[in-house]
Each structure stands twice: as C-alpha cells, then as structure tokens.
Length: 165
Image 1: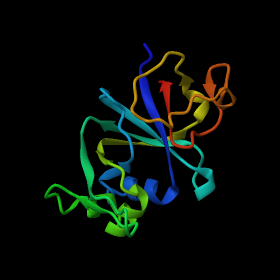
Image 2 (image 1 turned 90 degrees about the vertical axis):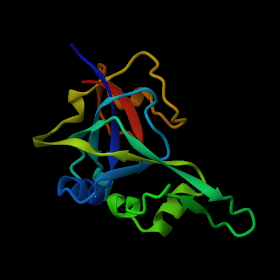
Image 3 (image 1 turned 135 degrees about the vertical axis):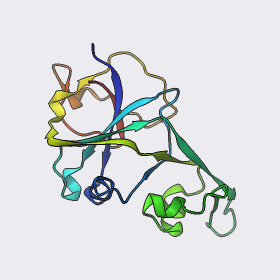
Image 4 (image 1 turned 45 degrees about the vertical axis):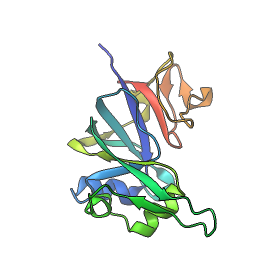
C-alpha cells in the first residue's frame, strides 16, 4: 500500500550536515498540517548535490519561532526562540541568517528524527504524484504537470511536493 509523504529539496551543504548528525532541525516557513510521517529529502543539483533523494526523516514535532518586532522602521526583525537558545546551533544557522530567511514571518524548526540515510540514493522517478488535494499551510506547494511523467516525479520541487511512496 502506498502512503503520502512530503518530498522537499535541500542544498547539498544542509544535506551533508544532516547526514553527519550535526544539523538536528530544519528551518521552514511552513509545516505539513496534520501530518506525521516520513519526509523525503532531495539534494539539489544546482547546489552540487546528486539530484536524488538521499535520506528521509520522521516528521512529528517542530518548534515555532515567532517574530516579536515588526521591523517597520528599520527592516530588522527579532525572533523569539521561546527559551530554546540552542535552536540556532541545532539549525546550523546564525541568528542573522534566521532573520534574513524569515523576514518577519513565523518560522518552523522541524525536528529531524529517525534519520534514514539511503545506501543508494533514490531516483525521483521512484516517487509518484499525489492526485488529490492534501491539506498544507504552504502557499508554495507545487503541483506542476511538467514535474511528472506517467505519474512519476521527473524533477525536484523548488520547495516541496506531496508524493506517493
């Protein structure tokens, strides 16, 4: 039986840090709503990666990082880590990088659990398009027809796509 799962793209730098066990959380501007399960990660070719799905991790928890200063007058933002001062370390990011990425929007630090690095990276064609709507709060969720051939994924998503695995 096939199951739905998000497939995300990531730069090689972050893929390598996760595989080495150094990056323990992944920063995103969205979360897969009401979803618990595997997240598949494709290392992007444009960043020197393989263009293949190199690992998966279990998604079931995240930290919400909220902006507490709107930056109206000086384009600066201040994020509240809710007492979790080790978040930037677990994200392998500097606070300024978090500010630059978030630009005042709420951010989510996904917990990377049950990491499974594949001995042989999976081809994108091993993943099938989801035909039905899957709830997500990501306005950039991709469902472009040119990403698929006979229902199989042919190119990596810019951010994320729901697939059957």
